[in-house]
Image (cartoon, rainbow, N blue to C red; front, side):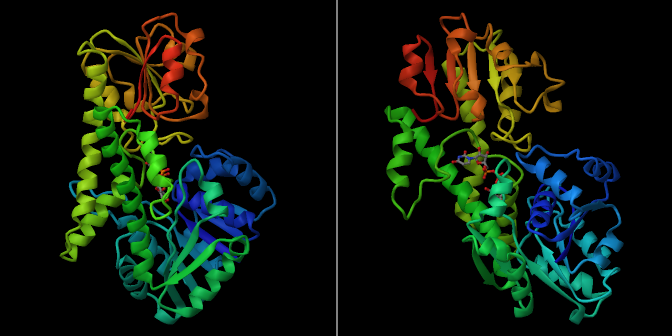
Length: 432
Ligand code: UDX
């Protein structure tokens, strides 16, 4: 099939590349000419394991192309995916849909035969209806169909999540579109992916409800971890103990810093805001947002407690600053609160991240990027493990630090407390 992806951000690029790898002809469109020129040279704008190889392979075999010409790309395609950003509006909790409607408007100028227009961007319920209205200003409804097909790709695991999805959700009010899209996804369905057909509005809500539920699960275990810290229980035992109940499930039950990234914080807020529009109070999700917002303060206080209220001049090795491992994404990372807190209190911070230094910390006092784990740990009083990259999972602390009083604050519970204590170091984790 001939596909066009509008927006070569995370979702558009990964989905476009994977669809081309499944044998479709794909044009990835973006307004950003530098991005498009770079992609043509094989320079990938984001860090995502496996993505570069797939781009090079499919660009070379000509199934994948990149363009800034939306009009031409839409004309050449049967199915158009809208994959633009829907960030939180300034001074509001609702989603900013301006890029989506702008894309709809552009598409409407280029429809030359029947097209399926699939929205992959995360949007509030009823956005599909609005998008249909935007396009129908210029095009008769019999020449297009607006469909919702939300993505469930995790950063760092996006290619795998695309190829082996738990489910593919397609929301359309017409059976013809369901059939065509089912055919598009048939290589994944034949490998076991479940295909779910719903009304368009239901698909839109499935996406928000999924993210809100996962955010709830994480906040739940984080609060249980707070109780574990007071009662000398290891939260890891609780996660295993409750996760084995199939009704609960063991995934997304890892206690840690506040959840971050491009989706959970934004989508939980947007869902509450959408519900308000429909006069519905989502009190559970409101509590989750509140609990997550408070979490970084709580962890900052714990660092203060661990360092016995003496943060000034302490040398802090901070390992991993992105919102989680296997990504270079800093959006809503708890390090954006923790590092400024430590800097303000007078600590000297040497941070290391496998994806390099970050502009967000450039102006902070006494915050420097280290070129390696070893360089970061050397001479430090405390090591804070903030993300769970494999690189951080078997650090030889004895070799890297001569400090006999070294403290390790393992915010991802990577290490066994007993083993670290045996080395003679002080260990603190989350909920243990
Ligand atoms: C998420 C959804 O998982 C994905 O389906 C959606 O489409 C996009 O948003 P992503 O933001 O890439 O994906 O990250 P995810 O792996 O879900 O983690 C989100 C946050 O939760 C991170 O801050 C992570 O550290 C945290 N998390 C996750 C936990 O603290 N504990 C867990 O057990 C799992």
